[in-house]
Length: 263
Length: 345
Image (cartoon, rainbow over all chains, first blue to last red; front, side, top):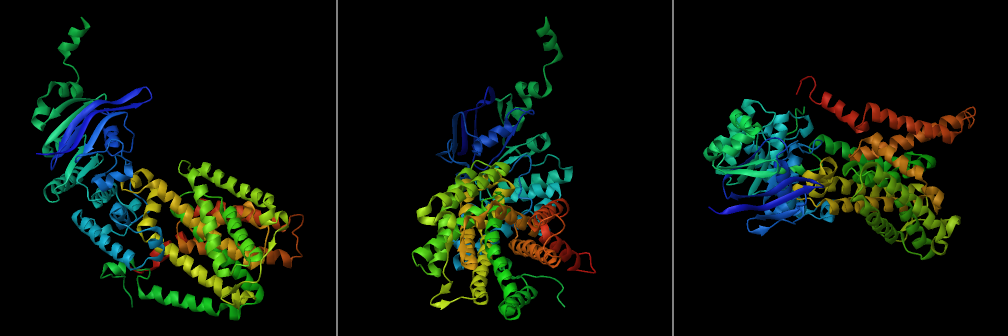
């Protein structure tokens, strides 16, 4: 399988704090890849580096053969990367349709003058992109709220709108930051089903940060584990489950070892 | 009887008029606007002209502050740039009105670009102060560049005329202003239903998410400044022709505050709200003038100007406290409540 995203030796320092320290892994085309680790391990920082929201201290990020380590964040979407945010970043006062249409931004060419005049070209573009947005709305089953301001929706639906907005950018790689946190079992299952559909129907590579180990081990092809800014393991769900470093990070030392350390 | 709004094509969804009722009301409004000067007194026509001119500028400010979320107290400064450009070009260089208007807009837009650059890094109060400083600086530049602006003595502008037709009276000038206001409203409504307007809104709501969606935030903030100040520049030029005189005193900082209060009262981000806010605030001022005038011009020891300032302040505070979405918010609430009555939805 070919590599879609390659991260090498990535370092991010905030002043004296090293949030990410020499992390690297490949994300293969067409797979579901999970990034896990305890709170404060640097997972979201990794997402912010990969989506270029934060500047990289050192290391390289390659997307589909293009070095994007220094690319401006607004040029990432046209290169085929979409993402969602850990703490919802939807446009609350805009309708669901308008939220998704913002995702179409880099696929449209309307200029300021084109917008002011709203001539036939602009009109045709609006029509075409609205059609695409409606398809995504159908896919995510949010037709019934399409004209509602997103701020007025329930949390689970807002998350789904955010997923839709990321899909509207037509990503090859989709970064999902804790999609199911705060969701009940039913909503979690819905999202798991959508993620599998993304992979199988739309052939989108998914990279996700998740705390829910159930969904991670059920649907991931590969998992990378981070702790204190470092990658401590990489492998298939079975390998990760058996990895002593992972068990240590999540469960701590065995009591025996602790006593030995004291002596 | 209409039981709901049903769209059958994407074209209907992007249309400005989503149902026949809206179309009928718009036609009625246009007809009323066309016959209005025939029924109004000269004084009232002049007042309406002033309102429509202010509306052109406030619609521009609304794109910047309401839609994009960049607070600006530069309104008076941009009005001054537009007004002085029109006055200098028409009085000293004899340029016709149809050239002066776009020239004023472009000149203000150029200044908008300059003021917009600090906005790339500043937000909220800091931006408000920067734009306020711009207004003050512009006043000083106008006062000191005497060779062009005639300093503190001001400039008298010629009678407005378009393509040889003199618009000497308020009633004839009314139609030109009405046409420009219509264009301004259409432009604003259009930009808001295109990707440009959605990008503006995205920047206001979540600038990082906007960036990740592919919106070059810095460039779009500058777009917002340029488009907005173009509007305000044109309004400034119209103001110069309307008052037939420009002077730095016509562009004091109070105008900026008044403009911001108009978009708050009307409803931030709404084009219709901008127009309603102008009518409300200027209408209130006019009513106050009338009431105080009929009481002999003074109210005990309180002057008219003091009382006006007090009422403006009170209006802003009351709106921010009780109806942050402004008059448009109230309208929407009532519309939603009654549109499907007696059914719940």
